[in-house]
Image (cartoon, rainbow, N blue to C red; front, side):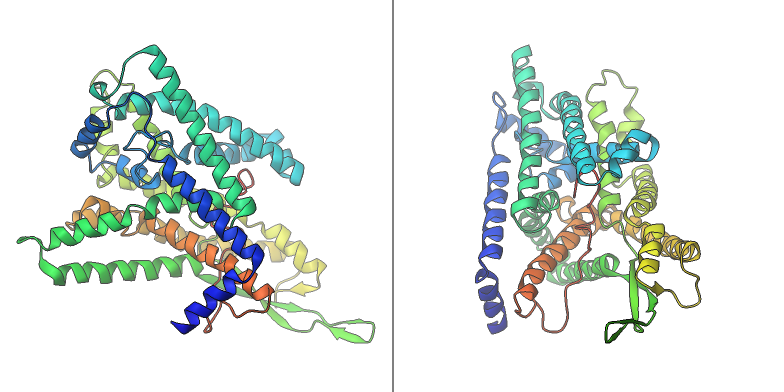
Length: 448
């Protein structure tokens, strides 16, 4: 306890770090307050009654992502997910369209143009999703049905998403951690206390299983968290030998170091990308007027269904390879090593080194992607194990991976500030190893 108090004193004794933390807390508070501002004209009582009747669907995941704003028909109801969807599209265009490939190679000016395109695309996606959200999630008995209400509600939802995006960018620039990822994590963790209380209450009922079963569930949750940390932090170290060279009167090089290649180099982005795409068909269902979508709605609105989980898992594996190819450039790594006089023992510098690194990444990415997909569908298995819906979302899946990744990387940034000023780190027994590119979401288009 004494060490913890001293660490907190060290953190708040650094003016820049203190200001960044306070700025982050202030902007997060603004986001949480905004999630309770309901769209004009909506009857909250009627809306709550429908939400209670329609719980247990895949849209509950989006409720978790937005901290309940989705179910309350808040001005932040669509949250940051349209921005994530826009980022996916821009990154895909960066592979297929030469113009976007050129922008990716133009450095800071190219990134600024890509960010501007992403923002404009976010407006379009939100404007497209907003009517589907209002039609499918807000019952007619809980809202006016006038053209003016539809126009103003869509405008407010678009403005809300843009404002949340702006908050995320301000946190990244002037706060601590990655803004977009922190906003998602805050929305998720806001539901944890109530979910824990509900689960405890259900286990204390006569047929619930009692305290022992609840403790077993908590131990399993702890085990899943530990496994998720291993997934986020796991690396394959490749030995690097630096040739000896003389600079002035000093001899440099001649030492062996290691190139750490992450088993999950893509972080949490594959699961967020996949989740964002899985939400799109649900919005389209809101426009359906006949029964043609019955099979589709039944299978893709229930996150425990076989087809939903199979599609979700396959998309995660594909996105893992896609994002790893963007995040890790073997050719660039090989060129940097050659330029600095480094080489992998037994491997020729240059093209052979790039091929070797690419082969290693391919081998470690496959089990990493499969394991990521397995963790992503754990909530469905938890629900089938008689765990309530709200608590099951924290039993793995997007929620847990995002929280683990964001917390580790935010703590790593705080520790970096402490070490730069010659303080001890957050832990005496070791260092917190965060992803160098951010919280698994450092995309060229979003800076996330």
